[in-house]
Picture 1: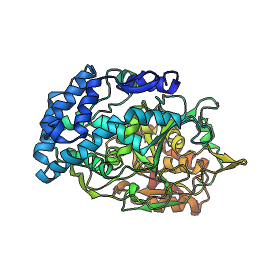
Picture 2 (picture 1 turned 60 degrees about the vertical axis):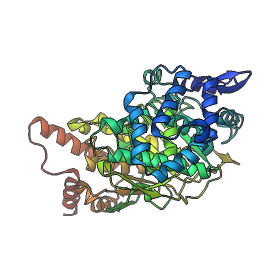
Picture 3 (picture 1 turned 30 degrees about the vertical axis):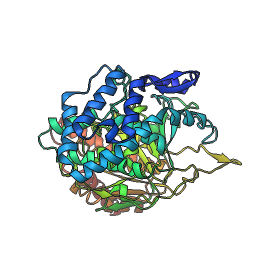
Picture 4 (picture 1 turned 180 degrees about the horizontal axis):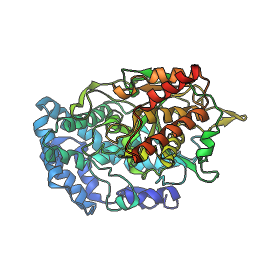
Length: 504
């Protein structure tokens, strides 16, 4: 085991050691505590949130993790399990769920060894072993849902070292800040409901561990063509001269991306650090997706921040929870049984694409370099490159897979939803996806998106034609701003006026 390059990259971020060519926990005391916990509260004496936080602190100290479990985190565990849970729920948690989690963590070293043993030829010789998938190089990690369960159980018990994560652009993976936020936030009902989603996931695992797999892939566009990248990074000339047809657009004024019923890439309006505030106070589109599909959290362990021409694709993450609301109104509303079909690799046919948008771009979003950045970012996520071939034919079955998206980067990030919707349309079309399903989430700014796309298609515009119009409009916005007289028309009305004028 010690000679594996992939293991060497991830080992500093685990509390495991290689001993006699096998993986094991670095502290025998951790094993003792977990073995007692696996036998139930009569052996471990872990019967409350308070005693649970004491056990977590003791395990962390025995692992010599330098950052102690904060006072707010300890109080958060106690508050949730001792006050926010009913006595019936609490009893089931400490008698059934927690022992099952302890068993899973005890098996973590063996599960990881088995993973490496089977990781060589999962997808046509592609390397899929657990490792840090750093920037500027594409790659994939292929994990069983059982191993992901063990990783997330470790996160719950805050057993991952954190000291070197920030310096290597890796987000926090332990759950201490999530529980601590219950104490540090005055209005915290939505945070309590985030934790309810996580707790529900572990309840499901304690009764039946899913048998499937999940893949995590870093996808890259590069300024130079090479074998590790999808395709050379397009410049403005590439987009302006593209003759590809624009794909059909389906506009949905109600519904949610994660509820779409056809095969499509489901866009995660991501932070450049995968997961954003999922394990902190955040509770908007990306964070909610990570709560209802908790297996996504595993990617935060080994995927550093995305650079400007990178995206992250996750295939197979199972959904476990229903919910209502958004942001402060977010509420866990019960169990969800995921019925998505399984592909030939044992993954659910759920494809989630994480792409991060410009943050608070203001007027700069109309600059050519920002238009290019956003279009290329979306393109890096939407483009498919076949990794599995048989007799020279692609067997990935992506030809019918469209893109389900919405107001990417337009809420808290402040992007122009009219510009962003059409930039995504350009990227979807250039990636040769068969359709774009657009969910408006009630945004008034995109209420006439359907009219605009139908008009553009009726004129027979290509990807390049639409790109040039977006650049023209954006230049007018910038020029008008300098002269303090921006165009009175938004992009959609401006396009409608142009197309209408061409009819006469």
